[in-house]
Image 1 (spheres, rainbow, N blue to C red):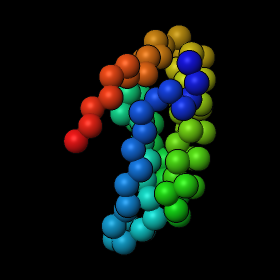
Image 2 (image 1 turned 60 degrees about the horizontal axis):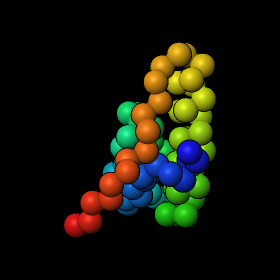
Image 3 (image 1 turned 120 degrees about the vertical axis):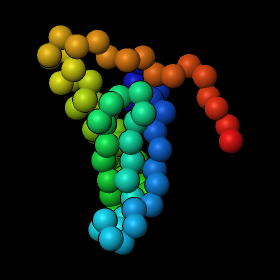
Image 4 (image 1 turned 45 degrees about the vertical axis):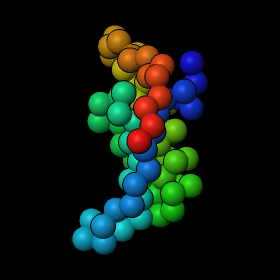
Length: 73
């Protein structure tokens, strides 16, 4: 399993929240990052996923597996 195995979303932030882009991994509660550009937000969420997994493992928590099915709108 790699950090890129997790489903991630990148969405624009409204200017009232500072602008830029937010990124998050829905299978990992609270795993959120951001960036000035979509590419930066994507890079940052993969770093956040790695840190989230490391912290969960260090704390003896179960790490959720990446979703196996993709849903398309």
